[in-house]
Image 1 (cartoon, rainbow, N blue to C red):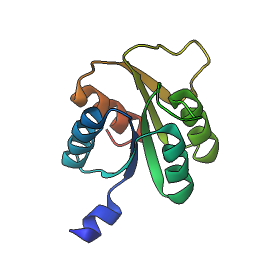
Image 2: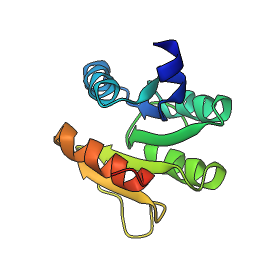
Image 3: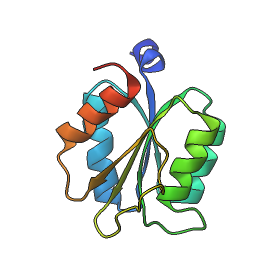
Image 4: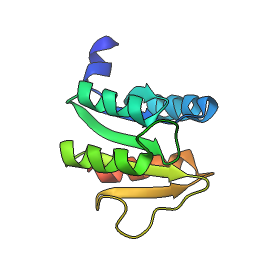
Length: 126
């Protein structure tokens, strides 16, 4: 099983709400992804620096720390231009031009199946 996890696309979930993060991680693992987790933008930034094989990031916008989800989406796009970026929020909607062109936004609540489908589309595998 370890071998299949290593071959599965690496996806980072950055979400400060533990229950929301846990459910998203489970949904992504069930969909066949190798999932990394972070509970703040700062921790998410450390994770993207540690994982050069990162294929996608899913991030909330409003989180504790000095890096919010919009900044994290931009940094991810700069370092990994081919990585899929999904940004989510229940309160704040990004303005035109706030997100990289390869990013998608989902308002909360969202359907996990729709987020996973968008992830596949952005990664070019579905």
